[in-house]
Image (cartoon, rainbow, N blue to C red; front, side, top):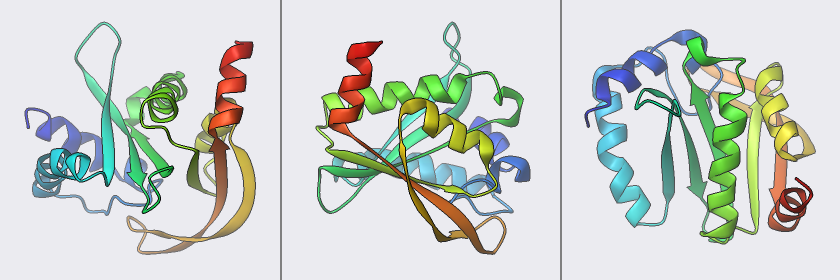
Length: 168
């Protein structure tokens, strides 16, 4: 709960929220409190797992990577956000990669999905660097925008992730 103010400041920025599938705008401080207070319960129930993204040599919170775990425990959806100040520096590729390591190795995910708004080239680039395959497009809700938008769907399976790790 010590991160409430930081989470609020990061995601109340429309430039951040408009790229996410779950963060509304305007975003209120009590929403950050609810999100953080529910994180442990949702993890314990096996429904989701959220990781804080921090700077390596500090405890500065700069974003989050999370898994929404589907009814089939071998399937999950990854989502993430990063404070605008930290965009374009490789932080999310590193953080999402670490989360995928954990998901495939310890949570034994078979496959991880993601959806990215079609015009979000930066997020699509993160998924591409991590080895996600493009599954095509469709429409998805954009809560901060209050409408449906075109999105590209991606997937990465455990076998492909492990093969990529062996090559690196």
